[in-house]
Length: 119
Image 1 (cartoon, rainbow, N blue to C red):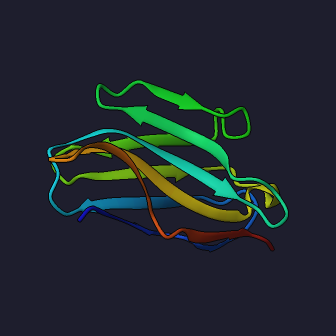
Image 2 (image 1 turned 45 degrees about the vertical axis):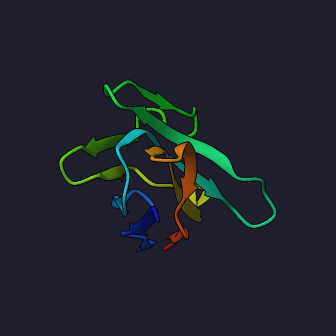
């Protein structure tokens, strides 16, 4: 059974930085891609950034030039470095990964971690 566990959320002041981590565990062959999504109260879940297995990245305009997504293949862990944070970055952040197991490739979600940007 594959699990994604996020960590690193919390309270940060405007202009501050935060790094989220997403660790994958369980029986699987390969992590095809990883991504970070967020959902603020009353809003739909939206993509923040994604990274594929060769390191190609995508950023939503909201995080362009402020956020950096990365992954450590050896640790099966993905990261989201967030800089120059704004109150509008406040949301629950979810990790998503496309992972190949013996049953095929499926999308998995973490449980979410709260990020609050406030003074």
